[in-house]
Length: 488
Image 1: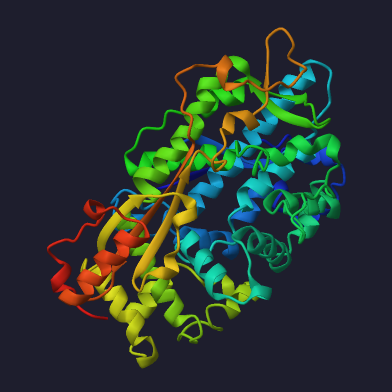
Image 2: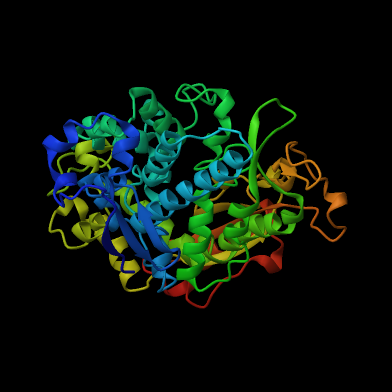
Protein backbone atom coordinates (compact mmCIF):
# COMPACT_ATOMS: atom_id res chain seq x y z
CA UNK A 1 0.00 0.00 0.00
CA UNK A 2 1.31 3.48 -0.90
CA UNK A 3 0.63 6.59 1.11
CA UNK A 4 1.37 9.91 -0.55
CA UNK A 5 1.79 13.16 1.34
CA UNK A 6 1.25 16.77 0.36
CA UNK A 7 2.17 19.86 2.34
CA UNK A 8 -0.70 22.34 2.61
CA UNK A 9 0.18 25.92 3.49
CA UNK A 10 -2.25 27.66 5.82
CA UNK A 11 -0.01 30.44 7.15
CA UNK A 12 -1.42 33.96 7.30
CA UNK A 13 2.03 35.57 7.10
CA UNK A 14 3.87 36.53 3.92
CA UNK A 15 7.06 34.73 4.90
CA UNK A 16 6.99 31.25 3.35
CA UNK A 17 9.82 30.15 5.68
CA UNK A 18 8.13 31.36 8.86
CA UNK A 19 6.94 27.96 10.01
CA UNK A 20 10.34 26.32 9.63
CA UNK A 21 12.36 29.03 11.38
CA UNK A 22 13.04 27.95 15.02
CA UNK A 23 13.58 31.54 16.11
CA UNK A 24 10.18 32.48 14.74
CA UNK A 25 8.51 29.58 16.54
CA UNK A 26 10.16 30.41 19.85
CA UNK A 27 8.58 33.88 20.01
CA UNK A 28 5.07 32.58 19.43
CA UNK A 29 3.66 31.94 22.89
CA UNK A 30 0.01 32.32 22.07
CA UNK A 31 -1.55 28.94 21.36
CA UNK A 32 -4.49 30.08 19.20
CA UNK A 33 -2.17 32.26 17.12
CA UNK A 34 0.14 29.34 16.44
CA UNK A 35 -2.75 27.10 15.49
CA UNK A 36 -3.89 29.62 12.89
CA UNK A 37 -0.43 29.65 11.30
CA UNK A 38 0.11 25.95 10.84
CA UNK A 39 1.32 23.94 7.88
CA UNK A 40 -0.54 20.63 7.71
CA UNK A 41 0.09 17.49 5.71
CA UNK A 42 -2.42 15.50 3.68
CA UNK A 43 -1.95 11.73 3.39
CA UNK A 44 -3.80 9.96 0.60
CA UNK A 45 -4.94 6.72 2.22
CA UNK A 46 -6.50 3.76 0.38
CA UNK A 47 -9.16 3.36 3.09
CA UNK A 48 -10.08 6.83 4.36
CA UNK A 49 -9.06 8.95 1.39
CA UNK A 50 -7.38 12.28 2.14
CA UNK A 51 -6.35 12.56 5.78
CA UNK A 52 -5.09 15.92 7.03
CA UNK A 53 -2.68 16.02 9.97
CA UNK A 54 -1.66 18.76 12.39
CA UNK A 55 2.06 19.72 12.05
CA UNK A 56 2.84 18.34 15.51
CA UNK A 57 1.50 14.96 14.40
CA UNK A 58 3.77 15.12 11.36
CA UNK A 59 6.76 15.75 13.61
CA UNK A 60 5.84 12.60 15.55
CA UNK A 61 5.35 10.60 12.34
CA UNK A 62 8.77 11.66 11.05
CA UNK A 63 10.70 9.94 13.85
CA UNK A 64 12.56 6.61 13.81
CA UNK A 65 10.30 5.26 16.54
CA UNK A 66 7.16 5.84 14.48
CA UNK A 67 8.67 4.98 11.08
CA UNK A 68 9.57 1.60 12.59
CA UNK A 69 5.87 0.69 12.27
CA UNK A 70 6.28 0.52 8.48
CA UNK A 71 8.08 -2.78 9.02
CA UNK A 72 5.60 -4.54 11.32
CA UNK A 73 2.76 -6.46 9.67
CA UNK A 74 -0.67 -5.54 10.96
CA UNK A 75 -1.94 -9.14 10.85
CA UNK A 76 1.25 -11.04 11.58
CA UNK A 77 1.23 -14.50 10.04
CA UNK A 78 -1.99 -13.88 8.10
CA UNK A 79 0.14 -12.62 5.19
CA UNK A 80 1.24 -16.23 4.66
CA UNK A 81 -2.43 -17.15 4.11
CA UNK A 82 -4.03 -14.02 2.63
CA UNK A 83 -1.79 -12.49 -0.09
CA UNK A 84 -3.47 -9.09 0.28
CA UNK A 85 -2.80 -8.80 4.01
CA UNK A 86 0.48 -6.96 3.48
CA UNK A 87 -0.49 -3.79 5.34
CA UNK A 88 1.48 -2.61 8.35
CA UNK A 89 1.00 -0.93 11.72
CA UNK A 90 2.17 2.36 10.18
CA UNK A 91 -0.92 3.03 8.07
CA UNK A 92 -3.22 1.66 10.78
CA UNK A 93 -1.84 4.15 13.30
CA UNK A 94 -2.26 6.98 10.80
CA UNK A 95 -5.87 5.92 10.32
CA UNK A 96 -6.59 5.75 14.06
CA UNK A 97 -5.02 9.18 14.61
CA UNK A 98 -7.14 10.61 11.81
CA UNK A 99 -10.41 9.02 12.98
CA UNK A 100 -9.73 10.05 16.59
CA UNK A 101 -9.58 13.66 15.44
CA UNK A 102 -12.67 13.23 13.29
CA UNK A 103 -14.76 11.84 16.15
CA UNK A 104 -13.51 14.41 18.67
CA UNK A 105 -14.20 17.24 16.23
CA UNK A 106 -17.66 15.88 15.41
CA UNK A 107 -18.56 15.81 19.11
CA UNK A 108 -17.13 19.30 19.65
CA UNK A 109 -19.06 20.76 16.71
CA UNK A 110 -22.33 19.16 17.80
CA UNK A 111 -22.11 20.31 21.42
CA UNK A 112 -20.69 23.75 20.63
CA UNK A 113 -23.86 24.45 18.64
CA UNK A 114 -25.85 23.65 21.77
CA UNK A 115 -23.72 25.95 23.92
CA UNK A 116 -21.93 23.09 25.69
CA UNK A 117 -18.17 23.59 25.68
CA UNK A 118 -17.26 19.98 26.42
CA UNK A 119 -14.16 19.73 24.23
CA UNK A 120 -11.41 22.23 23.43
CA UNK A 121 -8.69 22.25 20.76
CA UNK A 122 -6.09 20.85 23.14
CA UNK A 123 -8.34 17.88 23.87
CA UNK A 124 -8.62 17.16 20.16
CA UNK A 125 -4.84 17.39 19.64
CA UNK A 126 -4.19 15.05 22.58
CA UNK A 127 -6.73 12.52 21.30
CA UNK A 128 -5.11 12.60 17.86
CA UNK A 129 -1.64 12.00 19.30
CA UNK A 130 -2.94 9.09 21.40
CA UNK A 131 -4.58 7.52 18.35
CA UNK A 132 -1.42 7.98 16.34
CA UNK A 133 0.84 6.43 19.00
CA UNK A 134 -1.43 3.75 20.46
CA UNK A 135 0.45 0.87 18.77
CA UNK A 136 4.05 2.09 19.08
CA UNK A 137 4.78 -0.84 21.40
CA UNK A 138 4.01 -3.68 19.02
CA UNK A 139 6.89 -6.08 18.45
CA UNK A 140 7.70 -8.23 15.39
CA UNK A 141 4.54 -9.56 13.71
CA UNK A 142 2.32 -7.61 16.10
CA UNK A 143 0.34 -9.68 18.62
CA UNK A 144 2.46 -12.80 18.15
CA UNK A 145 5.43 -11.20 19.88
CA UNK A 146 3.24 -10.02 22.74
CA UNK A 147 1.76 -13.47 23.31
CA UNK A 148 5.23 -15.04 23.50
CA UNK A 149 6.28 -12.38 26.01
CA UNK A 150 3.23 -13.12 28.14
CA UNK A 151 3.90 -16.86 28.08
CA UNK A 152 7.67 -16.98 28.40
CA UNK A 153 8.71 -13.89 30.32
CA UNK A 154 9.00 -13.65 34.09
CA UNK A 155 6.08 -12.41 36.16
CA UNK A 156 7.82 -9.12 36.95
CA UNK A 157 8.44 -8.29 33.31
CA UNK A 158 5.11 -9.18 31.76
CA UNK A 159 4.08 -6.25 29.62
CA UNK A 160 1.28 -5.62 27.17
CA UNK A 161 1.86 -3.73 23.95
CA UNK A 162 -0.13 -0.85 25.48
CA UNK A 163 2.36 -0.55 28.33
CA UNK A 164 5.30 -0.71 25.93
CA UNK A 165 3.55 1.87 23.73
CA UNK A 166 3.50 4.42 26.56
CA UNK A 167 7.19 3.76 27.24
CA UNK A 168 8.00 4.12 23.54
CA UNK A 169 5.98 7.35 23.39
CA UNK A 170 8.01 8.83 26.25
CA UNK A 171 11.20 7.66 24.51
CA UNK A 172 10.07 9.18 21.22
CA UNK A 173 9.36 12.56 22.81
CA UNK A 174 12.69 12.61 24.66
CA UNK A 175 14.93 11.34 21.87
CA UNK A 176 13.53 13.74 19.28
CA UNK A 177 13.33 16.77 21.55
CA UNK A 178 9.61 17.24 20.97
CA UNK A 179 8.63 18.51 24.41
CA UNK A 180 9.48 22.18 23.72
CA UNK A 181 7.50 22.04 20.48
CA UNK A 182 4.57 20.43 22.29
CA UNK A 183 4.64 23.27 24.81
CA UNK A 184 4.60 25.76 21.96
CA UNK A 185 1.37 24.15 20.84
CA UNK A 186 -0.05 24.55 24.33
CA UNK A 187 0.46 21.01 25.65
CA UNK A 188 1.47 20.75 29.31
CA UNK A 189 2.95 17.85 31.28
CA UNK A 190 -0.59 17.01 32.37
CA UNK A 191 -1.61 16.74 28.71
CA UNK A 192 1.21 14.26 28.10
CA UNK A 193 -0.08 12.18 31.01
CA UNK A 194 -3.54 12.34 29.42
CA UNK A 195 -2.11 11.01 26.14
CA UNK A 196 -0.37 8.15 27.95
CA UNK A 197 -3.58 7.30 29.82
CA UNK A 198 -5.54 7.07 26.59
CA UNK A 199 -2.94 4.61 25.23
CA UNK A 200 -2.79 2.48 28.39
CA UNK A 201 -5.91 3.06 30.49
CA UNK A 202 -5.17 0.88 33.51
CA UNK A 203 -2.79 1.41 36.42
CA UNK A 204 -0.84 -1.41 38.11
CA UNK A 205 -3.93 -2.45 40.08
CA UNK A 206 -6.15 -2.60 37.01
CA UNK A 207 -8.03 0.62 37.79
CA UNK A 208 -8.84 3.19 35.12
CA UNK A 209 -6.79 6.36 35.40
CA UNK A 210 -8.20 9.91 35.26
CA UNK A 211 -5.19 12.07 36.09
CA UNK A 212 -4.78 13.80 32.73
CA UNK A 213 -8.47 14.70 32.57
CA UNK A 214 -11.11 14.60 35.25
CA UNK A 215 -14.12 12.32 35.19
CA UNK A 216 -16.14 15.20 33.76
CA UNK A 217 -14.27 14.45 30.52
CA UNK A 218 -14.26 10.68 30.92
CA UNK A 219 -15.89 10.29 27.51
CA UNK A 220 -12.64 11.42 25.86
CA UNK A 221 -11.01 8.19 27.02
CA UNK A 222 -13.57 6.20 25.00
CA UNK A 223 -12.42 7.57 21.64
CA UNK A 224 -9.16 5.63 21.13
CA UNK A 225 -9.56 2.66 23.49
CA UNK A 226 -13.06 2.18 24.88
CA UNK A 227 -12.97 0.01 28.01
CA UNK A 228 -16.74 0.38 28.50
CA UNK A 229 -18.00 -1.42 25.40
CA UNK A 230 -15.12 -1.70 22.92
CA UNK A 231 -16.60 0.78 20.42
CA UNK A 232 -13.63 2.95 19.48
CA UNK A 233 -11.78 4.37 16.47
CA UNK A 234 -9.06 1.72 16.77
CA UNK A 235 -11.62 -0.86 15.64
CA UNK A 236 -13.21 1.57 13.16
CA UNK A 237 -9.90 1.63 11.31
CA UNK A 238 -8.79 -1.97 11.55
CA UNK A 239 -12.24 -3.31 10.62
CA UNK A 240 -12.21 -1.20 7.46
CA UNK A 241 -8.51 -1.67 6.70
CA UNK A 242 -8.31 -5.40 7.40
CA UNK A 243 -11.48 -6.13 5.42
CA UNK A 244 -10.10 -4.06 2.55
CA UNK A 245 -6.86 -6.06 2.42
CA UNK A 246 -8.38 -9.44 3.21
CA UNK A 247 -11.04 -9.10 0.53
CA UNK A 248 -13.88 -9.33 3.05
CA UNK A 249 -17.09 -7.33 3.41
CA UNK A 250 -17.24 -4.68 6.14
CA UNK A 251 -20.89 -4.05 6.99
CA UNK A 252 -20.21 -1.48 9.71
CA UNK A 253 -20.43 2.16 8.58
CA UNK A 254 -18.26 4.25 10.91
CA UNK A 255 -19.27 7.44 9.10
CA UNK A 256 -22.83 7.05 10.38
CA UNK A 257 -21.42 6.62 13.88
CA UNK A 258 -19.52 9.91 13.52
CA UNK A 259 -22.70 11.60 12.35
CA UNK A 260 -25.00 10.33 15.11
CA UNK A 261 -22.60 10.23 18.09
CA UNK A 262 -23.02 12.63 21.00
CA UNK A 263 -22.09 12.88 24.69
CA UNK A 264 -24.75 12.08 27.29
CA UNK A 265 -24.78 11.50 31.02
CA UNK A 266 -25.56 7.88 31.92
CA UNK A 267 -26.97 6.14 34.95
CA UNK A 268 -23.48 5.84 36.49
CA UNK A 269 -23.26 9.63 36.65
CA UNK A 270 -20.49 9.79 34.03
CA UNK A 271 -20.53 11.21 30.53
CA UNK A 272 -20.32 8.62 27.76
CA UNK A 273 -20.25 8.69 23.98
CA UNK A 274 -23.72 7.59 22.86
CA UNK A 275 -25.33 6.79 19.54
CA UNK A 276 -28.88 7.29 18.25
CA UNK A 277 -31.25 4.42 19.02
CA UNK A 278 -32.06 3.96 15.34
CA UNK A 279 -28.39 3.00 14.78
CA UNK A 280 -28.69 -0.15 16.88
CA UNK A 281 -28.44 -2.47 13.86
CA UNK A 282 -25.33 -0.65 12.68
CA UNK A 283 -23.87 -1.42 16.10
CA UNK A 284 -24.84 -5.08 15.80
CA UNK A 285 -22.99 -5.03 12.47
CA UNK A 286 -19.99 -3.58 14.32
CA UNK A 287 -19.76 -6.51 16.70
CA UNK A 288 -20.67 -9.08 14.04
CA UNK A 289 -17.87 -7.75 11.82
CA UNK A 290 -15.46 -8.35 14.67
CA UNK A 291 -16.70 -11.93 14.96
CA UNK A 292 -16.39 -12.52 11.21
CA UNK A 293 -12.82 -11.21 11.10
CA UNK A 294 -11.81 -13.54 13.89
CA UNK A 295 -13.71 -16.54 12.52
CA UNK A 296 -12.58 -16.22 8.90
CA UNK A 297 -9.15 -14.59 9.18
CA UNK A 298 -7.53 -13.98 12.55
CA UNK A 299 -8.35 -17.48 13.82
CA UNK A 300 -8.06 -19.21 10.43
CA UNK A 301 -6.62 -22.66 11.12
CA UNK A 302 -3.65 -22.26 8.74
CA UNK A 303 -2.98 -18.75 10.04
CA UNK A 304 -2.95 -20.10 13.59
CA UNK A 305 -0.57 -22.95 12.80
CA UNK A 306 1.85 -20.47 11.19
CA UNK A 307 1.58 -18.30 14.28
CA UNK A 308 2.33 -21.33 16.47
CA UNK A 309 5.43 -22.03 14.38
CA UNK A 310 6.63 -18.43 14.54
CA UNK A 311 6.06 -18.42 18.30
CA UNK A 312 8.24 -21.51 18.47
CA UNK A 313 10.91 -19.58 16.57
CA UNK A 314 10.73 -16.63 18.95
CA UNK A 315 10.82 -18.92 21.97
CA UNK A 316 13.99 -20.61 20.70
CA UNK A 317 15.86 -17.32 20.15
CA UNK A 318 14.57 -15.34 23.11
CA UNK A 319 17.78 -15.69 25.13
CA UNK A 320 20.22 -15.44 22.21
CA UNK A 321 21.94 -12.21 21.28
CA UNK A 322 21.46 -12.13 17.53
CA UNK A 323 24.05 -10.43 15.35
CA UNK A 324 22.96 -6.87 14.55
CA UNK A 325 20.86 -6.46 17.70
CA UNK A 326 22.13 -4.79 20.85
CA UNK A 327 20.39 -7.09 23.31
CA UNK A 328 18.52 -10.38 23.47
CA UNK A 329 14.91 -10.42 22.42
CA UNK A 330 13.40 -10.07 25.86
CA UNK A 331 16.06 -7.75 27.23
CA UNK A 332 14.94 -5.33 24.54
CA UNK A 333 11.50 -5.06 26.12
CA UNK A 334 12.99 -2.90 28.87
CA UNK A 335 15.20 -0.84 26.55
CA UNK A 336 13.31 1.32 24.07
CA UNK A 337 16.44 2.13 22.07
CA UNK A 338 17.00 -1.58 21.49
CA UNK A 339 13.27 -2.24 21.03
CA UNK A 340 13.17 0.30 18.20
CA UNK A 341 15.29 -2.10 16.14
CA UNK A 342 12.87 -5.00 16.58
CA UNK A 343 10.74 -5.36 13.45
CA UNK A 344 9.59 -8.20 11.19
CA UNK A 345 13.09 -8.16 9.67
CA UNK A 346 14.08 -10.28 12.67
CA UNK A 347 12.75 -13.36 10.86
CA UNK A 348 14.91 -12.68 7.80
CA UNK A 349 17.97 -12.20 9.99
CA UNK A 350 17.32 -15.59 11.64
CA UNK A 351 16.55 -17.34 8.35
CA UNK A 352 19.82 -16.28 6.67
CA UNK A 353 22.05 -16.42 9.74
CA UNK A 354 25.04 -18.76 9.94
CA UNK A 355 24.94 -18.80 13.74
CA UNK A 356 24.72 -22.39 14.99
CA UNK A 357 22.68 -21.19 17.98
CA UNK A 358 19.86 -20.28 15.59
CA UNK A 359 19.85 -23.63 13.77
CA UNK A 360 16.59 -24.96 15.26
CA UNK A 361 14.78 -21.66 14.70
CA UNK A 362 16.02 -21.59 11.09
CA UNK A 363 14.58 -25.06 10.45
CA UNK A 364 11.12 -23.96 11.54
CA UNK A 365 11.27 -20.81 9.41
CA UNK A 366 12.44 -22.88 6.44
CA UNK A 367 9.41 -25.14 6.93
CA UNK A 368 7.11 -22.12 6.81
CA UNK A 369 8.73 -20.88 3.61
CA UNK A 370 8.43 -24.30 1.96
CA UNK A 371 4.86 -24.74 3.28
CA UNK A 372 5.85 -27.75 5.36
CA UNK A 373 3.56 -26.70 8.18
CA UNK A 374 2.53 -28.46 11.36
CA UNK A 375 -0.39 -30.65 10.34
CA UNK A 376 -3.90 -29.87 11.46
CA UNK A 377 -5.38 -33.00 13.09
CA UNK A 378 -8.76 -31.91 14.34
CA UNK A 379 -11.04 -29.23 15.68
CA UNK A 380 -14.12 -29.22 17.86
CA UNK A 381 -16.39 -26.74 19.57
CA UNK A 382 -16.18 -27.39 23.30
CA UNK A 383 -17.32 -26.15 26.68
CA UNK A 384 -14.86 -24.04 28.63
CA UNK A 385 -14.80 -26.50 31.54
CA UNK A 386 -13.44 -29.32 29.34
CA UNK A 387 -10.37 -27.44 28.09
CA UNK A 388 -7.15 -28.96 29.43
CA UNK A 389 -4.36 -28.48 26.86
CA UNK A 390 -1.83 -29.94 29.29
CA UNK A 391 -3.50 -33.34 28.81
CA UNK A 392 -1.98 -33.55 25.34
CA UNK A 393 1.59 -34.26 24.27
CA UNK A 394 1.12 -32.39 21.02
CA UNK A 395 0.28 -28.79 20.12
CA UNK A 396 -3.14 -27.79 21.35
CA UNK A 397 -4.59 -24.40 20.54
CA UNK A 398 -7.56 -22.86 22.34
CA UNK A 399 -9.40 -20.15 20.44
CA UNK A 400 -12.16 -17.96 21.84
CA UNK A 401 -14.26 -16.16 19.24
CA UNK A 402 -16.90 -13.71 20.38
CA UNK A 403 -18.58 -10.39 19.72
CA UNK A 404 -16.09 -8.51 21.90
CA UNK A 405 -17.54 -8.95 25.41
CA UNK A 406 -16.98 -12.70 25.84
CA UNK A 407 -20.33 -14.43 26.47
CA UNK A 408 -22.26 -11.18 26.97
CA UNK A 409 -24.40 -9.38 24.42
CA UNK A 410 -22.16 -6.36 23.68
CA UNK A 411 -25.09 -4.12 22.77
CA UNK A 412 -26.13 -4.23 26.42
CA UNK A 413 -23.00 -2.20 27.22
CA UNK A 414 -23.61 0.46 24.54
CA UNK A 415 -25.37 3.70 25.43
CA UNK A 416 -28.00 5.17 23.10
CA UNK A 417 -30.08 8.32 23.06
CA UNK A 418 -33.50 9.00 21.56
CA UNK A 419 -34.69 11.77 19.28
CA UNK A 420 -37.14 12.98 21.92
CA UNK A 421 -34.53 13.09 24.70
CA UNK A 422 -31.02 13.48 23.24
CA UNK A 423 -29.49 14.48 26.59
CA UNK A 424 -30.18 11.19 28.36
CA UNK A 425 -28.21 7.98 27.82
CA UNK A 426 -30.28 4.80 27.74
CA UNK A 427 -29.70 1.12 27.00
CA UNK A 428 -31.76 -0.93 24.57
CA UNK A 429 -32.82 -4.40 25.75
CA UNK A 430 -32.53 -7.07 23.09
CA UNK A 431 -36.27 -7.68 23.27
CA UNK A 432 -36.92 -4.11 22.09
CA UNK A 433 -34.66 -4.52 19.06
CA UNK A 434 -35.62 -7.83 17.43
CA UNK A 435 -36.65 -11.36 18.33
CA UNK A 436 -34.30 -12.75 15.68
CA UNK A 437 -31.04 -11.72 17.33
CA UNK A 438 -28.64 -14.43 18.57
CA UNK A 439 -28.76 -15.77 22.11
CA UNK A 440 -25.11 -16.81 22.22
CA UNK A 441 -22.25 -14.37 21.63
CA UNK A 442 -19.18 -16.49 22.29
CA UNK A 443 -17.78 -19.86 21.25
CA UNK A 444 -14.60 -21.72 22.08
CA UNK A 445 -12.71 -24.04 19.76
CA UNK A 446 -9.86 -26.37 20.48
CA UNK A 447 -7.56 -27.47 17.69
CA UNK A 448 -4.89 -30.13 17.63
CA UNK A 449 -1.73 -29.91 15.54
CA UNK A 450 1.15 -32.34 15.20
CA UNK A 451 4.79 -31.32 14.70
CA UNK A 452 6.27 -34.71 13.80
CA UNK A 453 5.68 -38.20 12.43
CA UNK A 454 3.36 -40.45 14.42
CA UNK A 455 3.80 -44.20 14.54
CA UNK A 456 0.66 -46.38 14.41
CA UNK A 457 0.67 -46.94 18.17
CA UNK A 458 1.02 -43.20 18.80
CA UNK A 459 -1.78 -42.51 16.36
CA UNK A 460 -4.10 -44.91 18.16
CA UNK A 461 -3.12 -43.42 21.51
CA UNK A 462 -3.82 -39.94 20.24
CA UNK A 463 -7.25 -40.90 18.92
CA UNK A 464 -8.17 -42.45 22.24
CA UNK A 465 -6.91 -39.40 24.09
CA UNK A 466 -8.93 -37.08 21.88
CA UNK A 467 -12.07 -39.16 22.34
CA UNK A 468 -11.60 -39.31 26.09
CA UNK A 469 -10.78 -35.64 26.62
CA UNK A 470 -12.80 -33.54 24.19
CA UNK A 471 -13.46 -34.94 20.73
CA UNK A 472 -16.22 -37.07 19.37
CA UNK A 473 -14.68 -39.95 17.35
CA UNK A 474 -15.67 -38.58 13.95
CA UNK A 475 -14.37 -35.12 14.80
CA UNK A 476 -10.76 -36.31 14.92
CA UNK A 477 -9.40 -35.67 11.46
CA UNK A 478 -6.18 -37.29 10.27
CA UNK A 479 -4.89 -36.16 6.92
CA UNK A 480 -3.09 -38.30 4.38
CA UNK A 481 0.04 -36.25 5.03
CA UNK A 482 0.20 -37.35 8.64
CA UNK A 483 2.55 -40.28 8.03
CA UNK A 484 4.89 -38.16 5.91
CA UNK A 485 5.71 -35.51 8.54
CA UNK A 486 9.37 -34.67 9.02
CA UNK A 487 10.45 -34.71 12.65
CA UNK A 488 11.95 -31.42 13.85
